[in-house]
Image (cartoon, rainbow, N blue to C red; front, side, top):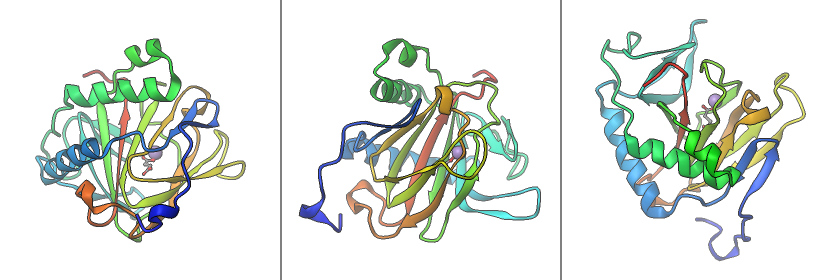
Length: 223
Ligand code: SIN
Ligand code: MN
């Protein structure tokens, strides 16, 4: 961390909007290292990490790999017919368990956590100049929460409203190890990443550069 000793203590849990909760520093360093190693493996295949092509001809600046279900604009498939035609890696049980712990930490609600059964993970890698425009996660046929885990460089995460891309929104700095969960009245809120803060990550995570974000979701399509 560049700021080292001068960093102020961070709050344990912040409700940014109803159902949208930021839990700073939730992932211990060892868990971040394990996730980085797992994501490196998934990035290799069976469906390699790539920049997603958009129907309008654009290409996303983040690089993405999926497990469980493969996301392509704007649907989920088992087979990555827009990449190499192979089925994506299976969604492991330990990732579902991590998702349930995340929901418990964010909402303090053990029943909601026990019900949570994500079946896909979208893994996004951001280099220094990558960003993600404001969008809604609405290709899932379920209103179960989205669990977001960040590792590596910090970013500005913009969390808005459910109506449009304009105000009101809140800019949150997501730091390596942070958890952000959005569900309930915030499940379909617009959100995005206007900027990454290069060089702010901790190389001990296994991420020498860049930002890794993992979102767990329930597609509603089944396991
Ligand atoms: C996403 O909206 O799918 C990713 C958000 C992030 O990178 O924090
Ligand atoms: Mn999203």
